[in-house]
Image (cartoon, rainbow, N blue to C red; front, side):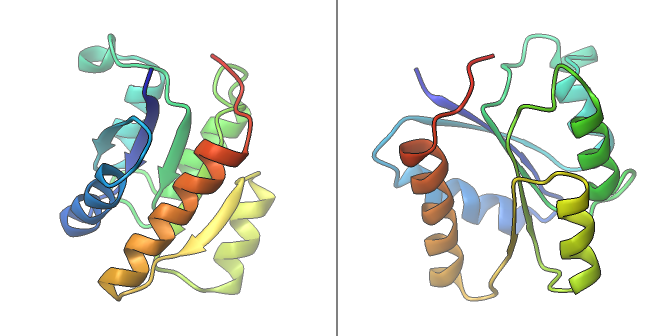
Length: 141
């Protein structure tokens, strides 16, 4: 059974890079992508067109999103009894200390700044994959 990943990313280029990096995986990964915070919460709560979507095993969350930003999404996830156990990896361009503190104060499982270099970006995604899918024991739904 594949690992279910929800990527919340408004930049199509970064979403494509993430997809490419995960496709090189030795394990089976199914990637769903939503482009803003409102869609992320609809996906997670299985509302509307997302009613049949799988429960993600992990969420890769950009902080800088339209409609509802990643900080709000993270706060909603961690306040929801049915969602709070899903690991959330904040994957964003911000290196601001205030964003890092905010992420951990909202119970993010980790915070990673996206590198601008393609090869480094792929290495980061593969490191996330190795740690969260091979080393860590994730809870079942």
